[in-house]
Length: 247
Image (cartoon, rainbow, N blue to C red; front, top):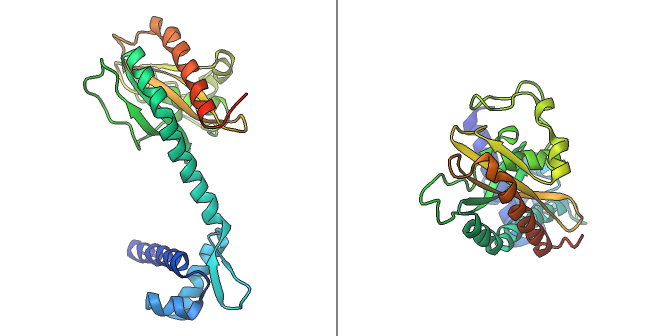
């Protein structure tokens, strides 16, 4: 299947979801007519969406409606938005106290993805990490998410970003992360960049995110990391409580 055909199929599948959201139960023939496609093409698209739980057949034969998979996706998106919103006041205080950039990251497709960022007074400029996928083995947030099972441990030889990058999964020392309750990286993703992170827990007690502080190595020195980690652990506990964890 060519790229153009794949994109067209995705566009049509999205259109089906939008029609069902607007109209409710809809006949296949009506969907095909609105999409201007053959009925068999509409059936093929519906079958793929049904397999993913995004649509389901209603009581009337030949009619479809949105499936519970849409609710699951909507819930996940809402949870992420809630996390970004509820963590912001805490991150603002942390950035002020630490003087460096503070991020909140979640696990997505095998990587740590930053969903929120606050720059501290010392961080006049810097990289915007929001929306960025970062490697789990070379970031403090990624190590937290790995240590607590939010991310699956990487396999094989890990990509090297700097001379300090850990390139073997068995050398990440995730047990130590769990023992002390925080993770750090010292110039493992970028030369001259250090970071430290702590776990954020959801309502069921599982780790759903990591809150981190990162900054240039001449300010955020290895000697300073435990002190910053203590602030982050307290901040992570407050964020956890704000999103429903009362452990």
